[in-house]
Image 1 (cartoon, rainbow, N blue to C red):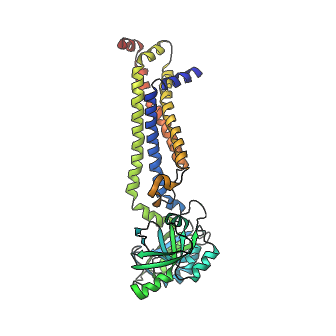
Image 2 (image 1 turned 90 degrees about the vertical axis):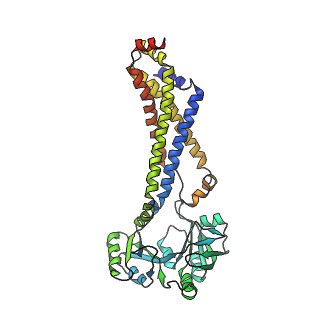
Image 3 (image 1 turned 45 degrees about the vertical axis):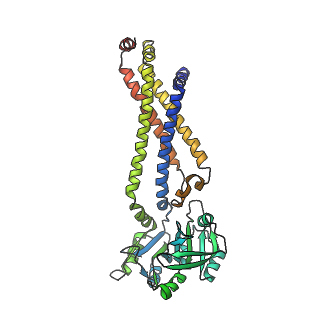
Length: 389
């Protein structure tokens, strides 16, 4: 058995340049596979991070239509509802650049619904006492170099005008998976200017964020809330946070499907490249394999030689992939991926992606070695020797 392994190793290195180039090709293919699935995983991370005990109440027609503020007490008093807050999506331009972080005008109770945001009591107190207060997420502050106590300006788009805010807190997340590309400011500040200056539906909110009690049934609470406002001018649609996020992702489901398809095409290309290398190698050594068969080597041994050589190349490509991933993800994400991290709050290779890459390298190696092995196993020794001579 040891001699067999030595022979496999020497065969793999017989043409070092060819083997090295094929290994690099396998590595690039696996790297592309990992990158595509990492992007898909980052795209879907919002669904995975969504809280199971949180719900969103919005206008039944569309999210762009508002709901009366007067609904708040009715939502909060629904059996099974533990906490509730409300807010409006703001949107705007920051430093002559369309911002890539979320901006929400919210009431104070809204922050209680999101315990994963590490907002200290001191920040909350300053938020309550300053009408133009703003709480800025750590990722936003780091990207734009926003300092505590700084006064910032945002040019409104949905709500026109120049809006000024005092940064009274910069909050991190409870863990690395928490998205802190967010800014919160007081809803009453937005509502006040809506009433006086903009005249854009004052006393109306974009959505309610609801935290339900432990053991409560989301479907029951959803129906109870929606039934309260049935047949009114502003009917509601209440859904879990997971369903709410999935609704956004479903709009890009075609893109995700295409990316998955492309990732499998990359693996197929890797199989073709490695198979081509093995076919060239087996053709060059056809006489050698015929001699081995004449000396008593069984067909299974021939299969082991060719599949082993292909596996050495493909597995070497996988180990090179692991080395590249270890280096790449030890660096700051923005250094490696640039502005791509602005679109994805969590950008990391998942363990199952690495496992899938390892499995792909094994399957491709076995298949690439098995194709020429099957061809050689069917040839007769005398025919091979006569053809070579």
